[in-house]
Length: 234
Ligand code: DC
Image (cartoon, rainbow, N blue to C red; front, side):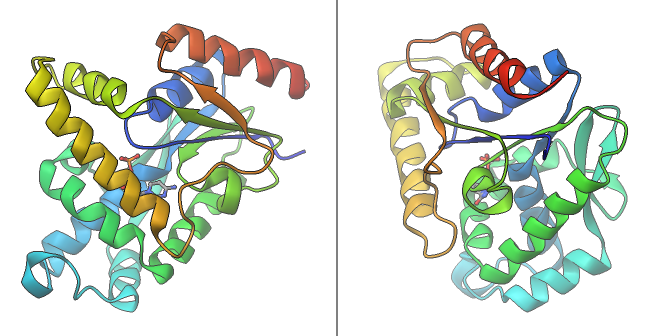
């Protein structure tokens, strides 16, 4: 049995925090697939530039994938967390920048990029060695990357709630105007991720839907851990 838990959902639904804690509690590794798309975006911005009209529209899949293989952009298991590296450097902080966030949906919509990213994730899980399993979070983990994962979770929360979480995570004031602006930005990114032709954001047919609007992080983590303990033999 493939020892993978797939956790998908829209931006700021708490996927990565949930996946990280679930992995900790189970003694499994955590792979944040968004970090891979972000690392690739950072590499493209730094090495190719912003392309046509500063929108990244001129980026070709082939050029980006060759760049990824040359640098390389890859996932490295450090302790129990897969870390995104560009040319051997940990880019964990740089990939959270506003510049990367603004361009990542364009990169993630390129078919060659997705094929490359899927292969990286599958290789990481196969070579995961030693850990009990891998909790992978993203947008298409249960639908495309690991459709055979025995446990698939799709997290949701209202855009306003997600906006509030994102602001407090960044240490910013959670006031009405800011929440509204952030909520609109999140909704725009969700729309881009859900309507793209390839691997759109959507729950797998057999995913467990978990609306976290009224749940604490601890509650959502416990729910997933409970499901995992029932499914995966020790
Ligand atoms: O979860 P995140 O915000 O770090 O993801 C960054 C972007 O990468 C997001 O806009 C969608 C894309 N992504 C994707 O298309 N497929 C995944 N499995 C993970 C992320």
